Image (cartoon, rainbow, N blue to C red; front, side, top):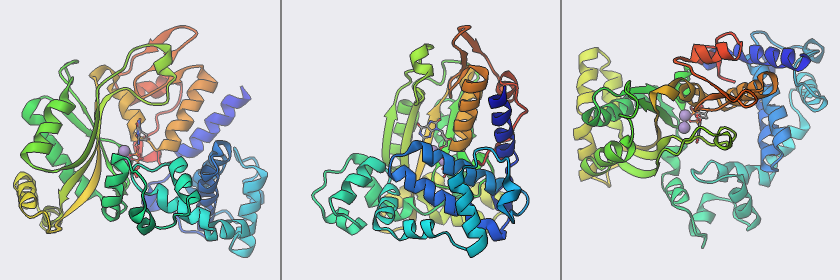
Length: 392
Ligand code: 8DG
Ligand code: MN
Ligand code: MN
């Protein structure tokens, strides 16, 4: 019961998050970032528990609608341990925290931060390269390392992929995806998920869910449509990693960390001149023309590959059967911390397993159907939390 109240409180606190643009820049504005650095550093030492502890407190602090002026005012805060208290106190008193300073100055932290920012590189790989004395991207490029396909493109397009994707760019990619999908499946429904659905102005990628009102029609869309249209007719695909649907209703899959949708993780070539044109001439008719020209723009970029009028952008496409759509939307809207907390709440307080496919009660062997996100929150006996309140 206590756990339930505590978790509910935590979720409600997380649920009160303001849109990122409205985050107040208070004297304690530094604290969430400081805690985030300690969280990252814990992750680099593969300490999941400490990573989560720092991340949660950082997230809650970020969400507060008022400035924190003393540690005492944080009494009773969920998850606030001794270590975090000490960091907050030091920043309130001295403006900086020594521990955080020494972390950011350490070679290990700097190198692992750099290496994990490469597409296809996780903590384990970054650490391995660090131990082999590599420190810069130039070191990696000059080395004998046998990179995976992801890492190769990650290094090749590093600058583009670490430049935030804007909403205008996401809109332009949406039009290209729509054009490709509707050609093969006119009744398909395409939904922008991820950070952009939460109201963020920029993101590290663009996430789309694609479904069809008639279950089954969506099957095979990734290989049939996206691959052919993107890849061959327009030359817009720089990288793609496709996988078919492997979902089955069974206990093993409900407890697995990954979802089983047919999906495609890609890197596409985005014509930036078209984006600029759409942004500057933002009356609706010109915007429409910009969108219509996307296909031709792709071809243009193809004719002049040396001319860099395009930007490499990460795009995730997920094909979802309509009966699982609400769960997929909830799962793919994020944020990652929000999803983690929500799943933890479902498990610990409701004895249910929440995934991007379903909500399942193992003891009763029962699946809960949901046609909309609201129904999932209702099954969990939580008040509805809108996407822009999920920026934990
Ligand atoms: P950003 O791209 O705007 O920077 O942030 P984001 O949109 O919140 O992050 P994301 O990495 O694109 O992930 C969006 C959500 O998708 C996230 O809450 C977790 C969810 N997700 C799944 N399955 C998978 C998966 O296999 N890989 C990734 N990266 N995310 C997944 O449900
Ligand atoms: Mn995203
Ligand atoms: Mn993504």
